[in-house]
Structures are given as C-alpha cells and as structure tokens.
Length: 103
Image (cartoon, rainbow, N blue to C red; front, side):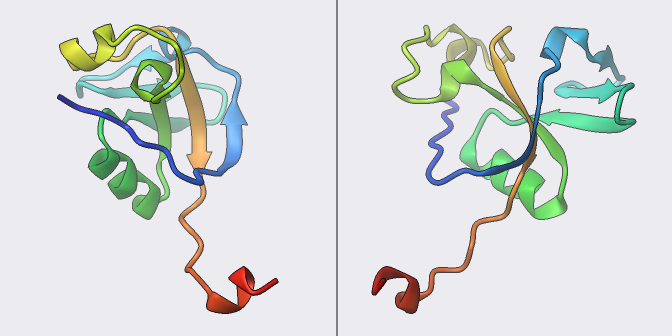
C-alpha cells in the first residue's frame, strides 16, 4: 500500500491550484500547469517524492496519504490521486549538521 510519511518537508513554493484544474497529459500521474508552464508529478510514495524532489520537479501529494490528516485512505487503496492535494516545489532535505543540534 503506497504511503507518504512527510518529515520536515518544506515547500519552496506552495501552489494554490487544484489537481483537477491542471491539464491532463498522456502520462498517468502527470499533469501540466498552464500558469507556470511546468509538469506536476503525483507522488504516492516516499520513494516517488524523494525522486521528484531530487530532480527539482513540482509535485502533488495527496492529503489522504499524510498520516494524521484525518482523511480517508481511499486514495491509498486505489493508488490514484484524490481531490485534496498539496502542490508545489519541495525543497531537498538539509544535510544534518551536528552543530545545528547544539544550538
């Protein structure tokens, strides 16, 4: 079962668009935003999210996949995006620095 576990996920940019408002493409799980002229990639798992962030891609993360969101798990079960999403560019994780934790 796909699952997203967001830990210290920071959006460089949060888009206010809805997944359903984005133009469909020929590729499943990819939509196109006409406002910013970028492809938006649906990420159903941590691995997919990590790959997209590493490539600097805009992402869509279903809120149904976020633990504690209080939403049903229907999107997880179907493997398809739901209507509730966080969309935007996620910053890559900061390297852990022992000096940061000493402050």
